[in-house]
Length: 179
Image (tube, rainbow, N blue to C red; front, side):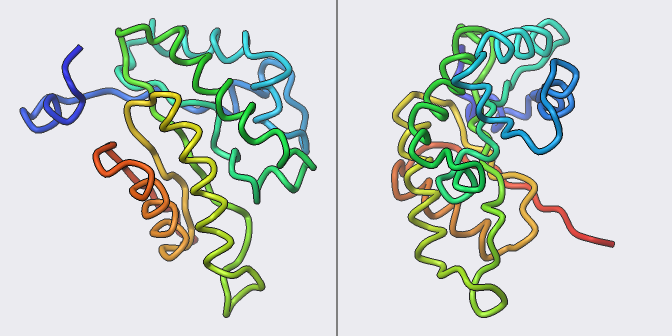
């Protein structure tokens, strides 16, 4: 399979997969549960979801690592499982993609407010994303998707964290704003 940047630079359109959260809810995820815990408790569900999106024509499959940063996982007392959660999230999708689709590591908001608006130091946010990015990049994802960010400064910290681990990995970012 060609390098993703080569395909994009040639003008080719690549199709991404769809929602992960709703697919997990349809398969038993309860409100208030950590979606990323499935990565260590039942990764076969992730393979099933990735397979459905691949069959539907997706060129890019996302990992179930949206809330996989240590700061976000701490909300569920799972920060000590960060490496296993992110590694398993990548492995499940790689198994399905198998050269037929690109694997994108999903990286979502930390759930913390940066100083001076909140009480979290930007260095702590950066360090948290760095730990997550190190795992997913070393696991061999094809690109990073910093997604659904509400704070441009936090998105920038996540991008810089990824770039500090790899100077060449493609990174895309999406924002969401209240209307």
